[in-house]
Length: 260
Image 1 (cartoon, rainbow, N blue to C red):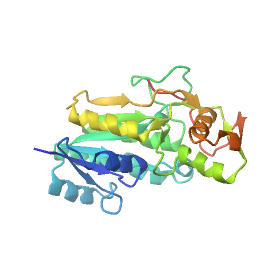
Image 2: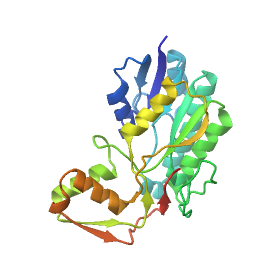
Image 3: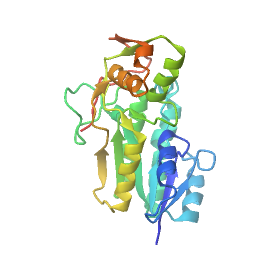
């Protein structure tokens, strides 16, 4: 019998990657992809109707508010989706015996550690986005026993969404000079690799529930990542890439985003 899997936030870069890689599969997986238009996770009645009609084995929650800058200005939107919407999903997963796979972030940490962050390290977010994601994690832990919380860092897709990788390529088409910070360090993570990790959890019937960290292996600064992107796309010699120490943003951001 096929495993039935709900993917929320299917219009985002991760949801679209899972759709591209796994919608047509011979692994005995039956996917239902939902967007905010047909499933608003902040609406508990809507979720209940959706779950009662479908009887999902797994729910991969890719729905999130990820605008870090705007979250500082209008935090209630971030909390509504990342904290309370996640709690709604957790409640329905408990009621309908669905295993929740939830995507979280390196931003639950303050970035002050000099070594990679372990799953056992104490979170201490320094911006509203990180705080909203941490409350979402704790809501899951409070409601469910069978869940996977996957923290990832610097997530990007080459094909979908608004992300650093695609932004650098867009800028390279229009500008001759680019100023990129080397103040922050992390592990850029391709949605393709994260998608495969998630699907492996399902197909291998992994029961090591709880918090997991997943990111790609290469540690670099944003400057180093920009350099990598330009070289990968044969654009490095056509633009002057300038390293800067400070990158002024409205939201505070962790300087160390490396996850172990």
